[in-house]
Amino acid sequence: MYLIINLGLKSIRGIVFTEKGRQVFSKAFPVHTTLFNRRVEQDASEWRKLLKNILIDLKENTNLCSEIRYISVTTSSSCILGVDDKIKPLTKVLMVSDKRSYNEVEQIVKSDEFKRTNSRGAKLTCATSSVVPKALWFKNNDTKVFDEVKYWIGAGEYLNYFFTKELFTDPLNASKAFFDGKTYNVTLLESSGLPSSTLPPVCSIGTTFQISSSVQREFGFSDSCKYILTTYDAICAVIGSNNGEDFNACDVSGTVTSVRLISNQQIQVNSNILLSQYVGLLDKYLVGASNNLGGGIIEWHKQAFYKKEASSSSVYSKMENAATKSNVGARGLLFLPYLLGERAPFVAPNASGSFFGIKRSSTIKDFTRAVFESTAYVTRDLIELIQNEGGINVNSLTVSGGLARFDLINQIKADVCNKPVYVVDNFESTSIGAFILMAITTKEFGSLSEALKNVVKVRKIINPSEENHFAYNKFFELFKELNNNLLPIYDKHKDLISMKTIRQNEKVKNL
View 1: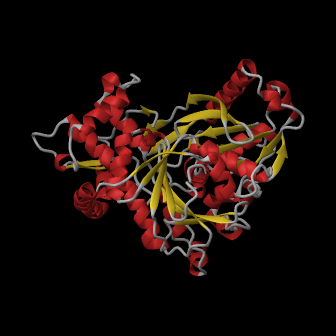
View 2 (view 1 turned 180 degrees about the horizontal axis):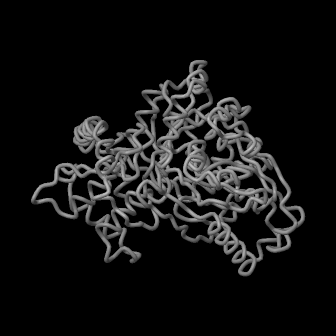
View 3 (view 1 turned 135 degrees about the vertical axis):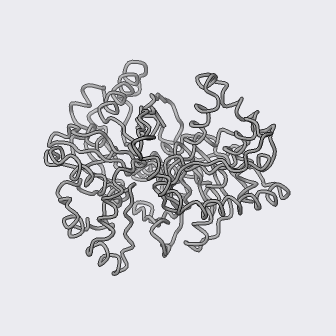
């Protein structure tokens, strides 16, 4: 048996798979997020509490603990917290969408060392979604806490330590902190003001560790149970939702949307937005990027437009029915869904959401349809980033995550992108991807293709409508034009709403 803990932006869940990938246990709890102006925070102590609740439920309500042979964790990347030498949190967790480190980003990218490194072809990326400027934000705004921090770590490292009592990370998580696949860029880190000794050691994906004796005793795991290092959720989700065909892009839309494909060859990228990430265990490259908000757009729309029904299990059906009663193009209404800024396919930390084309006749049906269609526009935007910047033609799209539960959204994505959409049978693609990495490590499967054939099942294929695609092409062109015209205005808007006379002091819970 294999146990995977999946900590995302919205929930933490534990899933147990058999050796062949059949799911036999699942338990989840919501994780709370606080949004306040540019601040997006979680609490690592809550992670630990909820993780223990999952393990207690597994122990008390099943007989699986003694049969679990391997454990791994996959979490969101680019979130950071400071801990002491006992890995006790000293700060809140700055999540990927937290934008307080804007000035620290400017400081880094304008530095001579950053420019020298990039002039040598490194193509380093540094944005408010990176972990180094987040750590430096504490240095510039809370020096006392910064000086007390022993290590700066992310969610994956924190939970790795919970199970093993060892501190380590994988190369793809480490890449968010100027790790080039072999070493951290010590010179750049030190010149930026962050000691490299405060970052976790890096181990290869597939490295095996011993589960700590205290965890074994508390939760009933056997002495032979091992911990296998995998990687962060966006990577695992692509592996866990791929249909096995060449040039198949995986659209994984949980709170954020990740669009990536698996390539046998390294892709020469020409920007700092498109990623080409090597997974050594598979000897493959994952090409693509993640944005700042995907399925989270639907959650916002639910809370803002369907507040009375928000807690009802039927609210999503009601939303889908409403959108169905509008038409292609939402009767001329377009939604730019940048509620937390954007990091791909363009970088605009101060971007915000907009409805364009509102008329006196516009109804909630049109607003809902426009929000649904926006999720397809951002997917196409990311596909075009892969095709234009990476030079890879995308032939098909596989969808998973929360948004894939909406048949209408899947059809809209097929129509907007003009590609067949494969809907996977099990939407837990992140945990499935982590399981596949573990099962290849343990030789349960001899290759990625064998694992995909046995584990990833397609439930349905949705083909695009030529008529709808023709119409959506026009709306997508307008969507892009609106984006381009608004980009220089977002910073002015940010300065305006930061004025004391209109500053909002409301705290919003959850993404």
